[in-house]
Image (cartoon, rainbow, N blue to C red; front, side, top):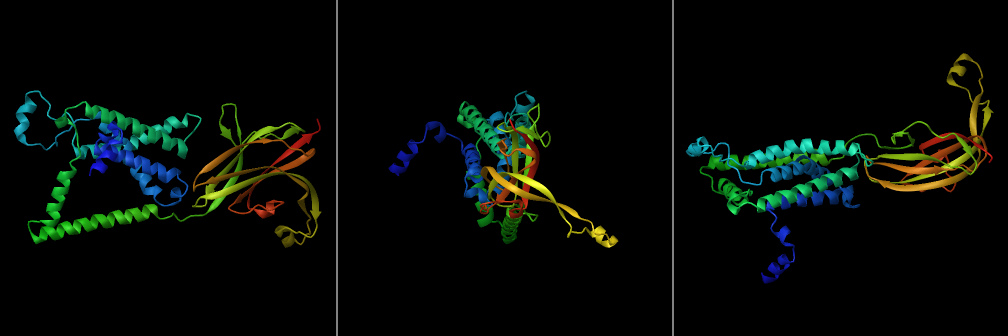
Length: 362
């Protein structure tokens, strides 16, 4: 017992004094960050229910706790306090538990989009890491303000979650019902709640059905600093470089390792007289088909990254072709979860994007 108390004294005093409900909010915040950022844990379905509980309840609850640190009485208080009410003194300086829970959900639904709107006008944008850090920072700050305001109040006026009263009432209703019918109804109610939570939890954590695919694409930065799929550099002088941004999207429904290989190719167009288009075959006309053949290829650069499902990644590439001539083809080949061949080509992967450039001698 003394050892346990000694270990408790090692914890900083403000944390030891933290109210239980606010401590629970910090624990949920910590768990959801672990579920999102820790490599092994983030691959499990745990991040979905934790993320929903965090985003839909925690920010609003700590914000309400900061606004109303004092305990409040139920709006259905006894009429015996009417005299105090009519005398001009408010008996409801705070709010009760039911109101806190309702306002917590409502304010969370308002706070999270507002933080996302602010992030939209920052260089970080609306992405997983900035959103998690912003919501976590808001939660910690609001929790600190709420705890400070509660500590400034007398102990009898502070809001506290009545865990003991709930436990006593629940135990009395379940184990000591007035009649057998009340006991059976209470058990049925508990089973119904457990079944409902189980069904909703399974629906949330079960992987969604849908197509699995990856994507690779090119972007550039316009004059306003926005990323656009336009304005690609097409004229080069040998030895000079231009900036492009390579993007990768993961829709594989699992965490995936990616390798992007950038190659430059000398090509020529050849006539394949043996190939006949379907329409030409129907008309009885033998129409030759032009094909692009790679005559020389050289690797420029490689990039590697690991993405969770529905994550995107942007990599700046200082493109500097070494071949000289017209219609040099620059190809970015994307290889998800696979070994890259020694001489990778477009035949080795279904995910690739290319850019035609002209390169002059200096």
